[in-house]
Image (cartoon, rainbow, N blue to C red; front, side, top):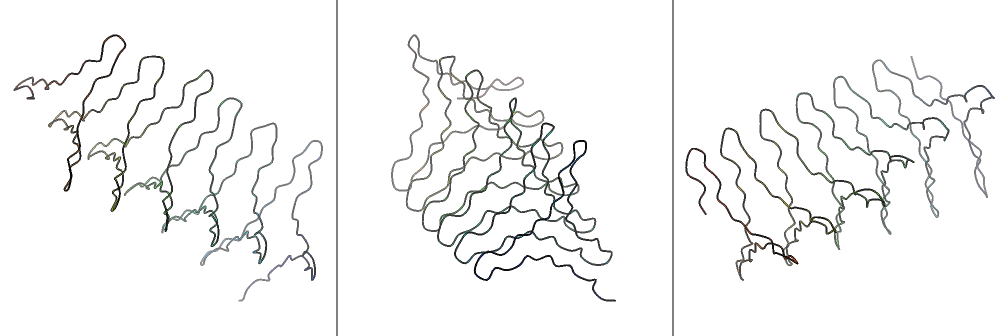
Length: 275
């Protein structure tokens, strides 16, 4: 009719020095066995919330807060996995999962690093995937740098690593998913506006090399049942100065310069496109 008895495992305090440690561990295995498992769990509940599990290091008035380390032991077999999973629900929303670096009132905030493992053959993959929604929208993914209250906001860099001595650098793909019954998603690459400075540039540039130069292609979408998508390149307007210039220029060559072609589209059953 009341609460079950509690268990408290607490080390002794040190009046002038450190408090005592608490160690909970299983013994090492023998020559032909495995070491014992260690389980930390709360009981289930039939009519209320189940108990929380808290792993918290103490705060410090004049030093650093204690570290929390979750580490899998090494071996010569497959490395052990680490999994942190929020709770599922049959009648409400699933539980949230959060990993947040520490804040600071006088210095820089803590860094947050997600890194897959190094391998002698291939490095481990890193996947960030939004959840599936069976009857509504799938989960969104937002990658946003931090704001700077008095100075600049943080940068966002998405890049592949440089290639080794006998390989090629990794490809970078930015695409939206396809759709069977509605419009597919848009892709927007937009620089921010400025109230008292210049708008940010957008640069699309192919790297140089000693082989054939890489191509740049901007193509509007085709359609099997309606008009094809429009393609537009427009220089910026100005309310107080000159409008921006628009330049189409083929490449210089040590033998012949590149050709420049402006061609109207073919019309199979009506007029071709005008120029």
